Image (cartoon, rainbow, N blue to C red):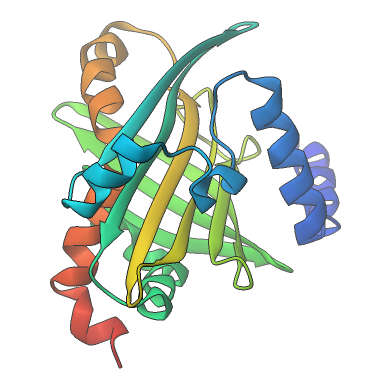
Length: 223
């Protein structure tokens, strides 16, 4: 088991950022209707969506997908944030702060790094349900996008997960934050209880991000 894990770690360290981005895009394309970072440029938004964004609303486009044994759900969401894009990106780069933007997260700590890939350990609690997992994350400063996927070499309760969080300049000095993800949280009695809450909360991450950056994070990232 140790040999398998070590081999996996070595292979991960050889992946350049471009290769991972290409692989991530291929996965999204393979799932019809699921999000991709390119859609965060606004291509997935219609006139009504943009009007809602202008009025301060969160725009969500949920997706459900059965792929083999995986029961995936997620989609994409957008929110306009009243801070400059450079400030929003500084917040996105601050991975240990993600416990403040992931719903019901109690811990978010960097566990390790291999080249451009950073392992981010997350802990979330829904009442009696306490789950931990590690995300393999890559930060692309040029495109201002944080990409992630579940690290299957680490202990975890989730079955699958991948996605991105992105910042884009919007109407002058504001930022359009877009988030996309597909996850399978597994089965079981407790999981079936929290599944509706997870579905509801997942696509609200841009709203949580907005509250954090416009609130307690404004002074920290505005310097």
